[in-house]
Image 1 (cartoon, rainbow, N blue to C red):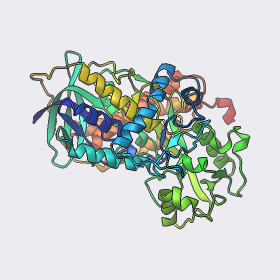
Image 2 (cartoon, rainbow, N blue to C red):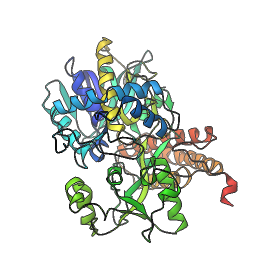
Image 3 (tube, rainbow, N blue to C red):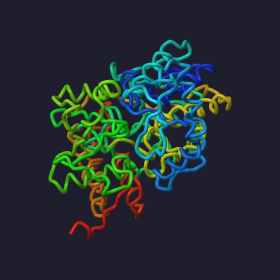
Image 4 (cartoon, helix red, strand yellow):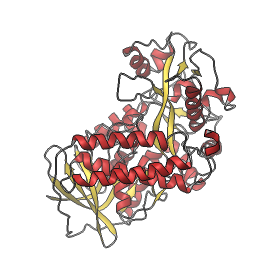
Length: 502
């Protein structure tokens, strides 16, 4: 089956829906979702959006905080582009119905998170991403120019004369293959946290957009910088990982050892509010030193009722597993959280392949450098989603009249594939995780190659599960290659010297 739209957006998080809503004023837009419209990384974003709105703040301070967190490897032009458009982006969201929390004077309440020198986080309690997803998702469903294709997995980008002019999709419910031709294709597929054994990302975050773009010849950058969040809820009884927002530490919660002692001041002057790469390594190191499966967040000293009022999602989740965060320590562990690298783009979201855009976590705009500053991700999605839509509309791209589409045969899922995926995720966690060694990276590189050879026996009858594993293997190979190329430790890439292990 062949369909035609002016624009195809792959992914339905904040970045994809921002593009779709902006572009829909100028043409027909298809939004392809691998799961339901609402099942995205955005849905799980608890913290908020960084924006200079307070009189004691400035663009320059937000820029400098971002550059410092990124360990000097950010693109400063891109950072300034994003920071200066943050107030406008929050206004745009408010106009669409997002109700940010307010203070006693009815002004937007501004929170504090790690790495920020000022209170500048606008939020909706501890479920900002959920609120954005609901508001933008509802607007997309109601827009007459937007068609939503749920449970459709993107397989390959369709190229003609070097330009991207469509995408091949798999209907995961029927097994039917569909080709969509378009003036431009937008990757908003999120990250690839499922390449790691422990991750805050949903199960759909398998690096599909990144892998497709790489196979299409797009340039990929900074894949060695994967951010590990230091505080995921430790709950061995549950396979899915629940994030404990950094905003809780911004409100005063402290990281502590099993005996209740605070330790982060030994690692960084900002203590528990140090940049995420510093905190994640500190937690990981102290877990090893104390032979403990987790460490703890202490929020017991916060004012009575504060957790229930401002962090209801976190409080209720803890309560559901028998932890009263007002009187008990919250057990936490680090987990893979955010892909700082990705498909390289310019300020308009353009990739190196004509007609192909990338926005949100799948993209490498240069704003995050070696380590993302808290609450810059939702902001990046809105800013660059709007910029990419404006650019794509202005280009006056033409729809292709016809195109040869590769044949595709759908297959069934395989238990063997699940085993290969589990092996890959464990390998990446142990060898390409929070701490790395040159020897371990070389071992991982060879093991990924062997896993790829084992996967080949499942082709050509490919299921969605096989496609996901192919994409994860591509992500793993690119990540390892980037890690081996960077010889120094910086940001999210921490390389132990072999002598330190003796």
